[in-house]
Image 1: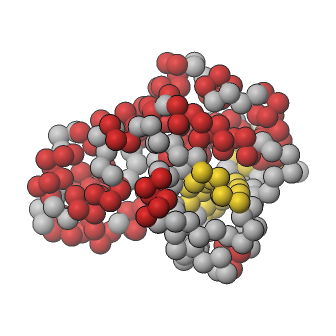
Image 2: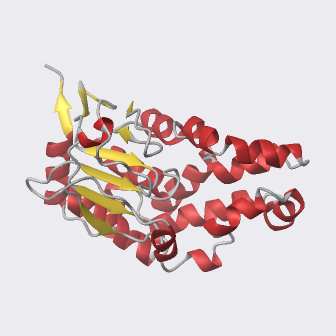
Length: 266
């Protein structure tokens, strides 16, 4: 994974060069992940040089309305609302309330303390696998990646950590990455996310808030990913079957994705 030092978009990374075993790796310059693009500067050299042709947006309708994407020149948007049929009952705070909760430790503890935030994220990650809108969204991502002649693609949500993190896990697993590589890539988002939210976290803890609660909310934890992987195992038995049966991606499309996105060292 290569971090791209763009100033107008957070967590911009190329999945290229991640190892896949047997001398193979993810091909550079074809699949990117990031946080939302509401501040993206299409003229910024680090962005313009990527040649992105498709942007898959995993955010909800409310998130898209509040902070519309600014697309790279020539890029085509694909709306893939992962949480369309779930967010209201998830137990997670709407994005608009996150700032309020992190400025009021008592309110945060009331709504999210006592392990409730971890439990809510675990439920949400299981829904990434089993929810109708989630399956449709990740199916759309893989269909785009498996389109012959498709150009570079970027996928994102709001912070680029949960919905986006599961998307990266699916893609890397499908390409043959081992568990260590998948987990390392998933957790690699934490430093950037914590940096982005640092002023909010510092203010929260200065008022007596539990720093662990703040990090559980704005970062990612291994147990969140474990919940989704367990849901795959229970429902489908393997990632291959999840992609084939759960997402409805034909084997020939999976093979095309592997051909497009992998490279073998000379």
